Length: 275
Length: 288
Image (tube, rainbow over all chains, first blue to last red; front, side, top):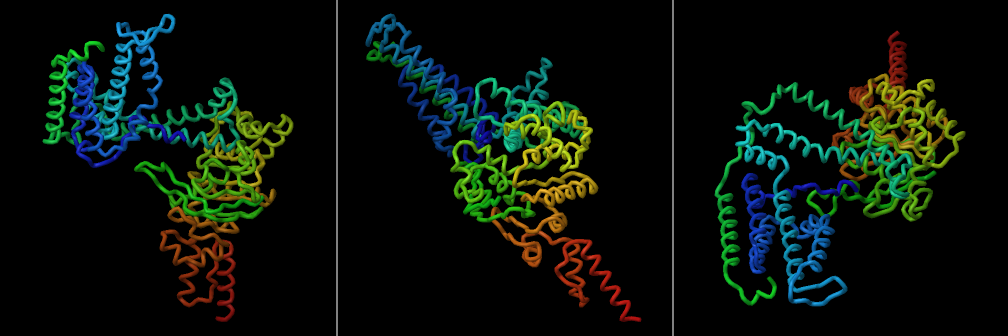
């Protein structure tokens, strides 16, 4: 069913991670991505993995959710891994197959890239699992605040994002409903070739576009009725405040960065054959 | 055609925090040619239940039987079931998509693989059953009024000539005259074709006026499934689950409570009028 699609799916809860300020979560997520690229030696990945695993445990997000977020990019991971396996030059060759060489360096690079990608997705997913889309756009609006000085339409952008996010579930539901209605009239969407399938989409897309336009019009009217005039002088009902929790999170992440940097600096001659 | 369910249970989003049982252990049988009203609050499971009857949803457990045969056992072509059990969704006008009303009504029959002559016949018949003016068939569905769009969409399902027709709130959002006309049309369709009709509605009045039997859903379960008289006889229980009996029935219950010799099984206004006139006539005579 269409309903099973997850687009930055929020997983409601009341854990420490859920209660953190969305701005801090956003900052820490970016921080974590930076850390993943700073890591240059295999031991640096250990604290990175432990950090994320710990965060997932604290947030009480089931492990199978990680698998679910990684599934769509699995082909990319496999593709880059295979490329790395065969095209990294090195001297510790494992075997040669025609023009292809597999080296220990290649194996290591492939592993490192794959792990980095997995952690990247798992890390950013943790943020979207624990932060509702609306508070996420709030956070983006506030963090981008300084750009207002150069007349960047921060508020408008955030409003558009909120509206888009708000309407994803509605439109998904609507699509589901229209699909059911056309299936009830015998529409066949599961079989046939490419052209047949593309044609089968017409009875769904036309009503869907019409309803999206209708909703947009209704929403614009409703906003105008409530005197919406953009972000100028607008106050907010939910004020964001940093709490001790957020600084704890920041502290832990900074420590992680420090550990990773230290691990990078320690000379590890026994690993030279990999580098 | 007889349609029945056996211990039908359906769970939404199983395994996530949003998990919800929408239909729980529903077993019922709807005989051929019956006119059944389906009633229940929003979220009581009635929409989920009817989507099982034409195989749009697959039961989490339990079976749906069409003439005694499990609809999911037949193999991959569940579409055949959908041609036998026609389902008109709520606000069906939002499903219109073709350039002309004619083509839109023909969508279902075309999917059945019928030839052009048969399709033409069916489109005209269906338009008539649904009360859609046949001279508007060549118009774009988007030029029509709300009521006409609704009729066109209903005709689109009737054109498949299903043995069982299910309508989810066919009169929702129409003005009183439009409501009555559409419901009247459905009653005529039922009388003329003798097909089974399921009518989902919020309105006790509509159901009392049109149905032979009533299915009351409450909290994902069947609360009652019986003849109109027997269901409305349980008015106290119905009130407990915040459903009512028709207003005119309430009036008669109060009259009876005040000691007037009126029957309590009054569900429709014409019948009530007859009873009241007789009562008044009687009263007049005894006074004289």
